[in-house]
Length: 206
Image 1 (cartoon, rainbow, N blue to C red):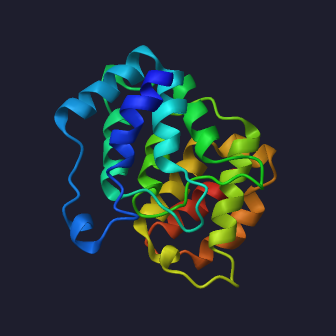
Image 2 (cartoon, helix red, strand yellow):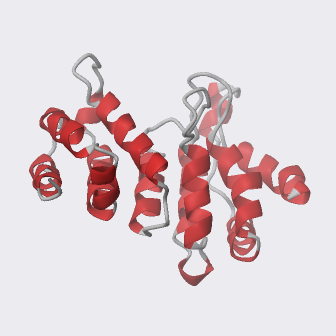
């Protein structure tokens, strides 16, 4: 793990243009094939250490308003979609728990058009997520669609896709956590064609 933090993580963190000039940011490039292959191999052979030492630190930061870059998210997406060499379900569950802290005082990954597809990919693998994590994701969706918030997320297809994946893959846990009714109340504020599909799936859980 120490070697991953010392030698691999810095290469991933360099892919984030935050703190660089505009000119340097425009020169940002996707991960090289060698770096991608290395991280995929580490994810296969040392999944938990890879999550803790590379993947989670690449997506989370103590700095307010910080968010991962598109290229960082694309790299992690390749790791998650690496077929037989991808992370195990247990490692994916660990990854989701780490980037979506159950402690309200902890800082998790910021939900953006770059990071939400990562969460959707994880949910589609159906890892063994705890009821607390599922409830936390539901609460985040409810909060984003709150009437007092004004944001473009309600029109985001990537947000709607994540919402749909949570409902269709973890419906029984949403029901156990008493999140079905609050989610049904939030659905009408989702301004995409998927709102009806999500609403139908939620009502089937009642």
